[in-house]
Length: 488
Ligand SMILES: Nc1ncnc2c1ncn2[C@@H]1O[C@H](COP(=O)(O)OP(=O)(O)OP(=O)(O)O)[C@@H](O)[C@H]1O
Ligand SMILES: [Mg+2]
Image 1 (tube, rainbow, N blue to C red):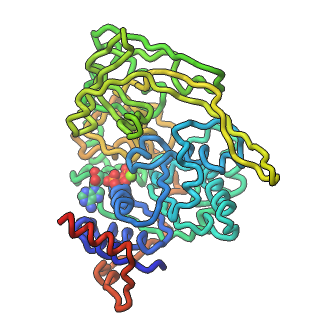
Image 2: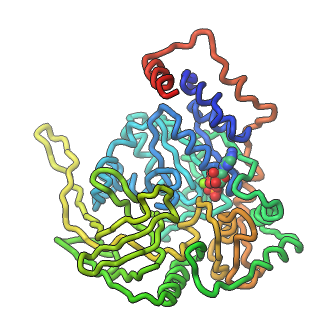
Image 3: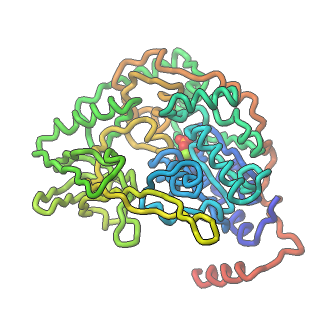
């Protein structure tokens, strides 16, 4: 167990930490103590909230990973694909293309003290294994799980599962590990996680809604709760800026966005994709992007203003003006950004560059990792934002949610969509409720029933952070303390 530093103790005793519930405080302490943690609990129990606070206050360097762009945005992290593709892992395991913006990432993961993964239920077994093997190999600690780095995994297996685009990959792992979840793998077992289950729901405070959500985790709704939820059947006449429509499939999402586009009386402007050089994956950007004034849009790339990040993939705004002559679009981002400067942002095309990685032989017969630009694709980095797939919404807290409760194809999809809202009144359903919309996986039910979790009865953080007699005050602390006093 890592000894707490004085600055850690100051934070753990601070008001920020005291505002957490007891189990969140315990999780915070264990993360600071260097423990490998599986932080779990119901949707809205504050898992991401705790890790965000941890990330803001830890002195360690952390690589923060999530399965999707929007989940990564939630905790200021990178997607797993981005991390694996742009590190030497990718170079060793598969030569291919990489995105220029990830240039700063290579090797960072190997010098990080901690690897933190949010929304772990959507991480594929293959990704988890590559991360483990690569960290062992590149740190030289072949016998230690994840190369001996502290691993923190965060998430809820009663939400969405990973998407396996290649069926053989799923079949292969299922055969090797005898299951389809990463908690059934050797990597999970070897990480020796301390399981911490957060048991207070913070996202919702409406008790009957909390009860419905809890029952959905077990796949049984009482008659009374079924009837309460069934009353939310209210097909959406026309999409508005405040409501997000959550759809199980991409097809439904596109249909809904197209409907909103058609209902908008403004004239449409078409932006065409432009390609320079030779690229292998032109479809990273669509052939055409059609936009209208007053359309709600989401940025689908990180946008930089010089060297600083201006907008992140996932930011939502409303189009205020389209200038055909300059190919510029003015957007009001006040729905997702508080700062006044985001009321009018002008966007031009974005560039997706393709890079080829190759190995160059050095004089000493070693190989050096190099890359060369193959070409680039230009397109307006915007997509319609009236509807999202449920996958893209996992991890988010949303104000008004409309669910197309049809064609659910995986367990817990309905639960994941519903649990984004704060109260039942904020939800509407496109179709009448039917019992077959509620589905669970009993492997998960059993996993949670048997999960040995940390016992935190009578836990008092103060007891654990008492200043010991032989505390060493190092220069970092003096520096921190001086800055702290100057800021008072
Ligand atoms: N101790 C707390 N006090 C007040 N608000 C909190 C606390 N913990 C979490 N919240 C708030 O509750 C909401 C849900 O938290 P969060 O998104 O961290 O939940 P989660 O467990 O990560 O959910 P999901 O499984 O959906 O990702 C957020 O708005 C968060 O700010
Ligand atoms: Mg979360």
